[in-house]
Image (cartoon, rainbow, N blue to C red; front, side, top):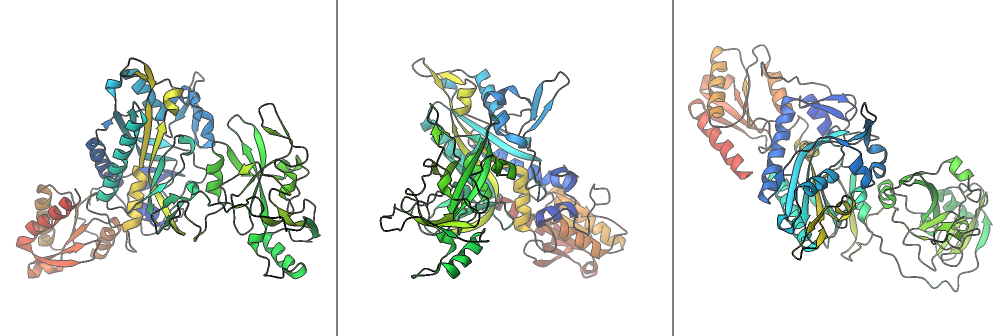
Length: 599
């Protein structure tokens, strides 16, 4: 410790909000270089390398071969797959001195595809799995939580190449099982969730989420086994309703009732029902957004959802990807005077709205497009905006008084909602995304012309899978999962040192005994950190050891006069006195047993 490049901090960094961020900085594992960008210190780099090693071992076990691409890449391959535009503002773009377009890679599908195209041309070369562990870059609008969501991060990405869909299924399943082994070896709890493919494209997609209260992802699960990211949940739509007895739509004055809560209160006071009170679920609220499509075209869309639900920003973003979506501004609404803020109803939008026409390709023109929640089925009755300041429309029936252009899965999921597969009510949880696997199919192979000759001598487009693990994010998730109020508490499998030896006293015998024990354990093949600082108090050494979080600490101090040293288990808190003469061998046996259990 006297010459190890580390400094611990007693105070939390001002910009840190979550435990892993606070502790990794305070314990000297990382240092902030810029928002969302961190310098890796020796301690942090050792943990990162241990996570990488487990990933490498399991990737090689399924036949993966490691390559390494540049992080700085030409724009042309990404332009050919349209991701130069589809990635939007999260893509770091730059120009070289010759005005050529480049990017800092957020992911490497294009480069893997082109590499295989350059090297292989026959079905005999397949199947193939390539992987890399490389730094990635995304210009996050709000980097947060330290290395959980940064603008520079370390990721393992692998890609499978197969001749047909059956081969892709096998490759996908092999990766899925490898991921389960990786996270099990790391001792990291995970849930496998159905997910959206997003800008990656492809069909089947699953996320590996570490359940954690500070996670940015919401996922759902049912008692019957259904598990999915909230973005991927599909709503169970009710059957159409017979509305033949519903009175005609009626415009009623509702002054000041421009919110759902105010509308419910006003309706119950002035237009009470005879069977029950009005509820938020009886209202249909409009949420107007502006889409910016990859070609730059803008479109205003009215989203109508039940009044007892809010729009989920992540579901909204995922539903409209690759278009960018934002809440419509006053300027956007001004272009459509029929949209009355606070009192907008679906009657002036959608397929049945006045002014709606269609071009020769069947695309709607004129009236604003209307997309409704799947629960808004034909015959359902609602109170909606009256499209007039201070008025709402009662007895508004879907399919009779307005016609939607389609449905939109953008409303929040609530606990108790039915699982799409009928396996029971859903419960909600938070999680950190630590892995994601995709069946890409032929999207990138077609765009970049990756073909091979099949058994019959005919050209065939290769089918691909893409599989990512956030290596630096996994490290943060482990820190979150294992830390306590004193500091980090690494599992043996990733700890930068297996044993932290503390010389806590002033006598030469204490320091010499500690040094001898540290050397003996180190010579047995274990990583040892020896706190040999002479002018540092025992209290500071104990605090540093607990903060830095090695699995075991060996205290050589006041007990030495009685011929014993103390072994502390950081995670369990157990303390054991060991005779000095037997200490090295006992510690070596304990460390060996723990290391074997994590293989």
